[in-house]
Image: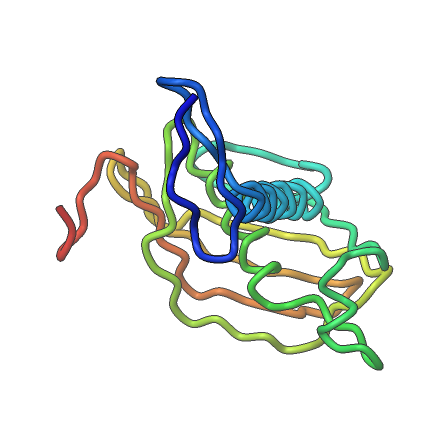
Length: 173
């Protein structure tokens, strides 16, 4: 048996030749990293972009509905006494709908211009998302988007630009 030099604060570890050792510190760090990765994956799955697609005409228009449950984790901190759906999550829903409207292919968000958040979206609201394609090519798609709760417009996007995944943008490799 071989003995390896102890790490600071750790007891000496004995290993057989060719065998590696891990300390309790290494195990704890790996477990914490795994827990954080699982939490990120759960959060990504817990917040859907939209719940139901109502209409889809590829290259022209898409309409969907997103229900906002009171159980979303973001409501505990944003804001405790007056829960509000973060605008970035609403924008993410509009982007996902724009990808559906753009048609087949892998689309990445390239730019967003003219975003206006007009009213709060809270727990229990049902948001109607509408995306209309204004320009479409195999390399780039530009859309206008609107989010409504009932008859009230809660957010608008003047230009949401998607680029094809194979398109290289200025300043990138």
